Image 1: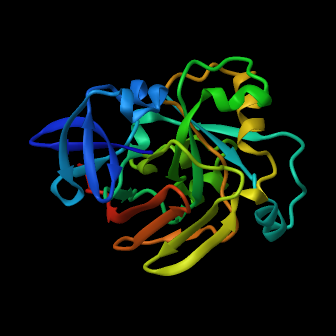
Image 2: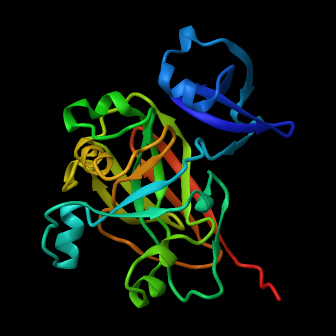
Length: 263
């Protein structure tokens, strides 16, 4: 089931998509994720996909991201495989949705794309073993871990480079039923394929990541774990169109717009 956030007539709603039609559900997004059974939900109105504005499907309290988590990416960079996951956090204020603009900061000279699979947490998660991790996953989404690469190179830590407003596009929706261990993941920039791999190439799989992270911090319902990017990361420019895809989830499409200069 694909859960989606959308706006119609100025109101924010939740629904699920089937055959290009959105059926509204009388539930908050997190409740819908936890229920995962359309037959048990109170169904409301339905809309054609083109009639509504798709928004980010979730409002996470935090996005926990993983650095260097694909074997083929490590090979590309000629780097040793990490012994444990490298983590950092993007703020919730960086989140945008499908078809929204990524704002290119005037203070940056290089803004890069990073295609990633996002894990959506469905309930409070603390000290969870990997074998029980599926019980805490509400679904999966697509994330573009946008990065100001020049700032990342300059700074000791990555917070500034990863945290600009609009630097966490996610969506277009949440897929509740899929195998995260074998998903094609790709990114096209102006229709040109730039990243192309499979989640089976992850160094630490989604369940191992939940165990590792939940033993450091409590994950709240709606939080996102962005699981790292495959090889082929590179720069984007103002006016570019970027399409990030995970096979069984869908295509997250965004475009780049220059930051409006403020005086």
